Image (cartoon, rainbow, N blue to C red; front, side, top):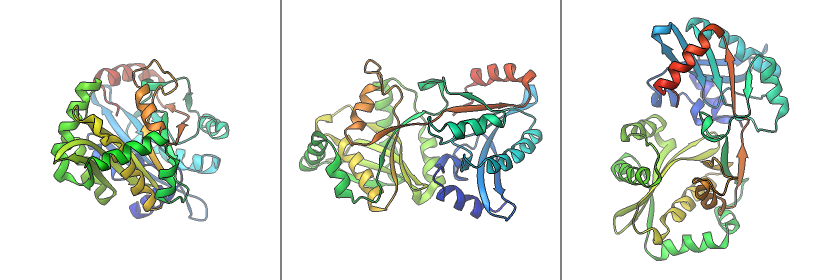
Length: 335
């Protein structure tokens, strides 16, 4: 396997994702992994796929999961066929009962959806919000070659005001590495308690920073050396992704989150990236949902909601499927 070719194709493809990078396997080190490089008859790479493998020893089977995979042109049926031929060999090797994918396909790309269904995948477009392994709805800014100042001027006036307020009040925003991980972890714990969600461990965040090296980092806001907000971001496949974020319970009137987001957007624009991805905005359409405030904050930066098609499942062993699904849900094996 030519991993340089794998990374080149994945990182340069419009449907590439950091969760399809080989770096992701160093984060998900509790799964084993397999890679696919599909080439056409002329030897040209037409698709790649990282598959995570979770073994279920007492059932003598495995679950396969390709987070945001495969990476290819989903309108190219031959590329999909070449990828799936290798998938079947991997499934046989690991005695897999199912493969789950959630590729970067627009919800209205009916041709791509039909192509996957023609291979035998069951499409679960009915799943919403937290029913999906990964959020279907992301909030994104299409940078499209604009300068940072042009992007800034597109923000809503109140957002621009809050960014300038944070700067006037002396909030300092800086890009950091693992040296600021303790501060980030403390803020994550505050945010988890305040907003009522389960959080990843400090060790998990360290794995991401180690795995992606210079392509990942922490963006931290401080006031008089007091940490006020933080974000873990990954720069991959022409996209800067805001993967995890947190903020202090205190001094929220200094608007550190606005300044933090602006600095990451500026980072993406200055590097000529195509997309700044705020990532998930589940239930953005429901003003009564507790997550609606997340969407309301993000939409002031004048991006748009991108809704992906969602999850597809392929069943290799139907007799094993039900038992294995029960076990997987009970053990919370998914991401």
